[in-house]
Length: 277
Length: 277
Ligand code: F3S
Ligand code: F3S
Image 1 (spheres, each protein chain N blue to C red):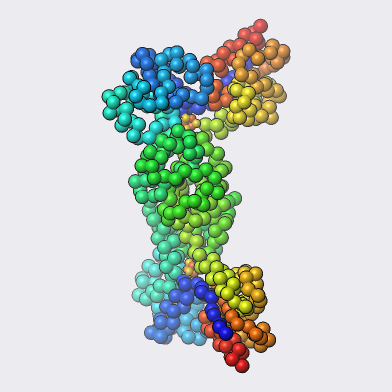
Image 2: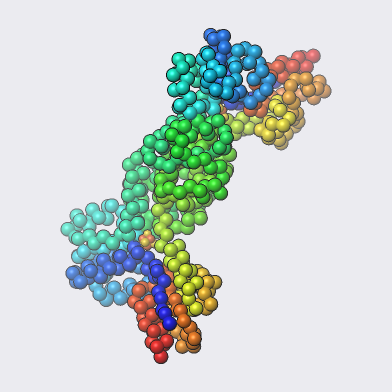
């Protein structure tokens, strides 16, 4: 009997890294400040608040190190923090950072910069800063029609849909003389799904952990159901039922993007206890 | 009563220019050599053969100046001609030349070069030469899947469909990290159609000149029929009928891409003679 956790289950690399950076910093400093929640999971936010990570709206509220989340911030925020003599603890995801560098590069090369993403997303707001707020934000083939320039450079929000990105770039290519495109879409979601599929094929049962309302977890569950004999979608280990594991040889576990590893760990141990009687 | 010829009727700028260059050269030199016909119109080819323009397969057949057609040739052909001490008379369309420069630029910048076009088209064969024969040729979203590289640079054959180009670039953008695209599609056809439409709206009758089998001429005819009271598709002035012009005020003329201006001129004069009795 074997229990295996799928690769890339739960948090992506960038979020995991940000959490680790926050953990290290919280050992060193009594309190830490961050613009917005570190990840979009209420339990995690509450937990880190207790540890000393305070969510702030403006820099006036900070009197200690400021943690930059995985989404990144515009260059001006770094300057402002330093001007106040505060320490920057930078947990920007390296893939997001790369997209920021591309945005700046395209701007420096004289391209009209276009960001493929959602206007309101913090990552996009940060990218904008790297183009000195000259970039246009579009998110569909239709909005591509609004871009008028002979030299256009494109970067994208890492979590965008690759299909819609392709269609939008296709529209731009029809009307723009010179188009330089950095496809900065992150494959974390795709890899999580691929790994889940692979494990599901080798398993008799798949346990998928994540919010019942989480679209990416439901998608994971669908993939697991199609590829293994049986699959269950749970939020915590409390929902596990003993009889699911009767006569089962190979057990697989995966988790959606907003599931912290300690919840995966708890489920793993609970299953181990069940099968070991 | 008014007879008006649509702008951009007949030959595009590049072909017209090539013909003029050939005419000038034929005044200066007894014979001229060209790889392939100067334009794809049998009457024109025959006419120029009589004037001294010989179509050749290899340079061995040439003992006088060599005319480069509007499609262009690979850089090696220039070298070979000069090595033999022969003169180059370059009638490459400036828009094609620009695409060649882009192909070379992308190659020099270290991109894997992709040419959007038809493998067998002389323009594409010339572009290939400007990438030192390292480029891949694709012509559909499907063939885009064959391109594997992290930095891809695209140029296209000037006469390709902009719709299919867009779809293909969209496919590439989904899988290529850095994509630099020069949309070198020429708008000669589109402009010819737009000018015909505009004239058709101001005319009581439209005369459309061009081969009955020519797809671009038939398309012109459709546009004219939809936008003026009456439209006729003819190949030469012989087909004109007197009664078409009874009580007509405004007469418009346009012509497909392979129609030489002297045929347009003859139709113009024939109509003038008809309406002047
Ligand atoms: S935050 Fe995550 S989704 Fe990708 S861009 Fe960074 S690994
Ligand atoms: S040959 Fe003609 S179709 Fe355009 S690229 Fe040159 S004007």
